[in-house]
Image (tube, rainbow, N blue to C red; front, side, top):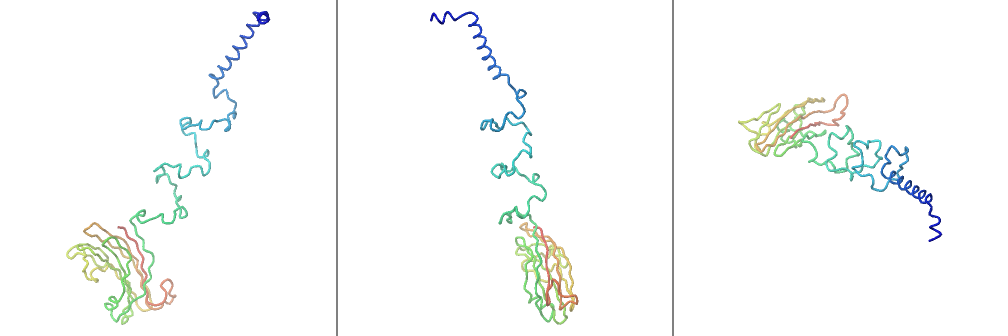
Amino acid sequence: MRQIRKRLTYSNVMSSLAVFLVLGGASAYAAKKIGSHDLKANSVTTAKIKKNAVTTKKIKKNAIVSAKIKNGAVTTAKLGDGSVTTPRIADGAVTAPKIPNGGLTTAKLSDVTVKGLVKVGAASGVTAEAARAAATPVQLLASGPLSVYAKCFTDTTASTTYAEVFAATTEAGSVLVGNSDSLYGNPFLDPGTAEDARQIYTNSTGANSASGWRTIFQMSAPSGASLAGEVALYAKNGTLPEGDGVYGPGDTCLFSGFATS
């Protein structure tokens, strides 16, 4: 102790105390006073940031722009329910390859039904009435109790082929407006209404010729079901001078159309 006391001079004590205060004060200053402006550019690297240190609250509004998001980083699991709304989807973004098999069900589609081209071979009879009765109905469009069907037939005596479209219902008290016939009450369009009274349109053509037309229709049932749209109908008889083209050989009819329900 005597040796230590001999060395404890005023100057030694004061110099040691000064060093302690300087170091201690500098540390305290560094802990409390170093801000972002004291950091050298690019001095805080990714490796220096503690895991989970950057939370949502630490991110400035609009700081993360598209260019800062890694390709493939935003997966389905990262999207909130209902976050991708129709206005957020770019035009043409949802292409066929983006739709999974079975992804588009009837419930996902609008109420517009499109019927592609239907080719029907003509039935035949010695009169138009006999040929019509022999022709098989081909359904084109339907909604609930309402439907539209087509027939194709040839009157062999007159060498005339007919393409005809008819309305039908399974619900009594329905109504119809068409180019050929309209049933809007007294009488109504009923399940037992004669076929020739519910004809929407007829198109015919003579020997070795073809013709086409289009017709509109509207139907409603007491239950609230409705069916309205347009049908194109073509008829060909025999062989055409220019070749049979889309019709194919023989007496044939073509039908296509669309409807809303």
